[in-house]
Image 1 (cartoon, one colour):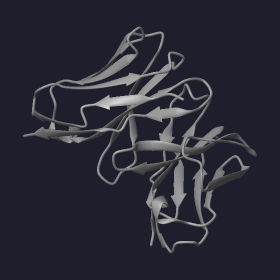
Image 2: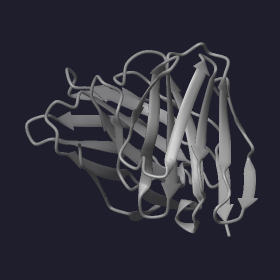
Image 3: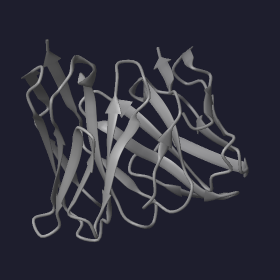
Length: 111
Length: 113
């Protein structure tokens, strides 16, 4: 099956700085890569996703990049704010319904 | 939030007892999933369903069974609960194939003593 690795496991940044979280995957057939944000005690919420036919996608302060050759994808958050503090999960999937998740990154934005 | 509810939201049970968790959706989505979330492991797929009476195993299916008799309901059963099954269980739904957005329910915190 697919293996998704996520780094770092914890990340602290000053408010206003950028944060980058990286994931690698093993199955070259994976074609969908979502990112989820999970606040303490809450459900994971989809914040952005990218498909294998696209190299980059942006949504306001959040962007995701995908390098299919190297089999890695990254989440970039610019101008971080305290409300960005949460656990972020990457995932990889291919048609066939199995989603494989990374182990999460706990992001703390220091005011 | 997508129309997904889970019941119960919290449960404490004893080792060896059967437990059933329910996921209910009002979105008429075809695909439904059960995950467990444990510290250091992220979210791991237990079972999923791609239609009424159509289910398949995920990566951590041992000790769990599922049933889907209606589009809107997906049940997860622990036949004989063990302490290793203490976890937070999330249901998720997806409108089409695995290459589409997946939305999570609020979760069920299960403690097996």
